[in-house]
Length: 129
Image (cartoon, rainbow, N blue to C red; front, side):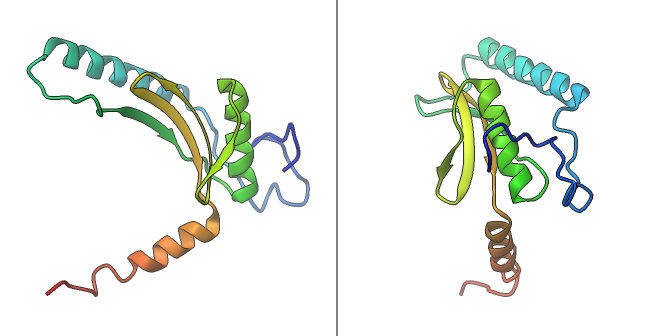
């Protein structure tokens, strides 16, 4: 991927073959922020609810499109977050931590998703004794 490539950039050879959904739905963005505030308020007013030093809250965005578009979206959002995209296992990711809360973008390659779907296609056929 070239530096500066963004998910919304168009390549005349592939733009129509690989459409990408809009990356920001203002209503979904507002609703998620509102839900996170509601969760924070709920936890603050319910100190009897258990949490541990290991409890985390993560918002994870999985970009759409083909591998090139998904990786481009991770790179684009990394720039917005002031961080860099990197590889974790077979996924391209970026993120920002806010203490025990975090925002992550994860691009899962097409071949990894295909292997997972193939594996899960056997889920109902194998029953433990």
